[in-house]
Image (tube, rainbow, N blue to C red):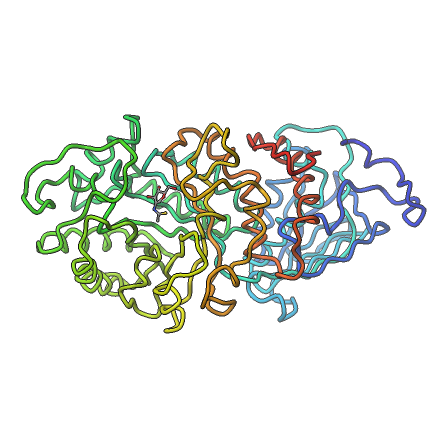
Length: 512
Ligand code: TNX
């Protein structure tokens, strides 16, 4: 299906214009407004330059980095308006107010491409759209001898929600910095802007804490099923945060507590109420561990961990977990919350956590993350009524660790089976009683890793579902239908093949 783009189109309206593989309406997430114009297709040439103003320079370099491997063109990034010739121009500060901080305006004409935004973040979003207007072969890592026609037209675009997140559980199985960076690149192309890293759980502790060195040195040694484990040094974490930022993605680190803490309590016996050592756990039970709520050292531990984590986390949120604390009494859960919430504030951060925190009357700046499977939750609705924004990740819709069908070789099924359509066909502002558009901060697609060991496993569960969550978070509600989405989704698969993404070929989609 590639390689036809050099020939004239069969469409008489576009006669004499180079044919493009895609149109501006084929993009995921669906843009707010896209008008195709096949007469305006732009052909990238060895003479094309990428023009950028000062604020757009980094994004321009990123774009050049995307386009150079497959084209083999020089695509120099130039500043200012020097010289004529065909160009892709990136301009900040001259876009419509409508597009806000993350949106953009894109115009592809036969004479050149113009991308405008109010911020470099907006330019980055626009670049992800522009990228999908190229033939899929643009994703190849080696030079392809062919022509490169970008589909013509105009796009005006901005997100529905400002918080569009993916979670990776690096605790059940450890993923190396290189694996996390690969995932960052994969999610960035769908305009996901947040990466939630689940850094601790019963089976492993994954971040170096200098004041409690055994957390990583001991707690980092284990993983589900007896695997080798691992952890990030603070330097490696900082590098990951920086890499994510270069893809306009904010990292939200999670330390899960007061439950899901066996790895910490195995590393330091003094964290246990009786002070006695406990064995490591590598099974996948949940709900058996709890920090010792009535011991002072528990709060020294929490303070030290959150202080060190806050210091290396530029984003405004720290995720303090809070889920499935079945081994903590309800009274203790409240006591713990009251002691820990001010610690997060003391280090200049805001709280996110699983929606279980909604029952602790958290500060209004806290963001409970809904992970239930039914449309009613009185505590979450009450938090929304008080003014807390809710992050939506209903487990029977958004959990990418759920199997697609009973025979899916990876994943779990406690929240149900999630085929591609099920994952796409829901809306975050109508799923939960008492939580409507204005109560929703955004959408997250969590990927728990009890059954996932390799990057291929991550890819198989995240693709093709992840682009759907990205679209739910970005695109206007009224512009989304499954019937139209499945056709656009089908056109993504050649890109994934080029990128080496090992995706699940759902029979619900007629893949290209
Ligand atoms: C429940 S959902 C959990 C995790 C598991 C996950 C598996 C939630 C907040 N907690 O501990 O990994 O199910 O799907």
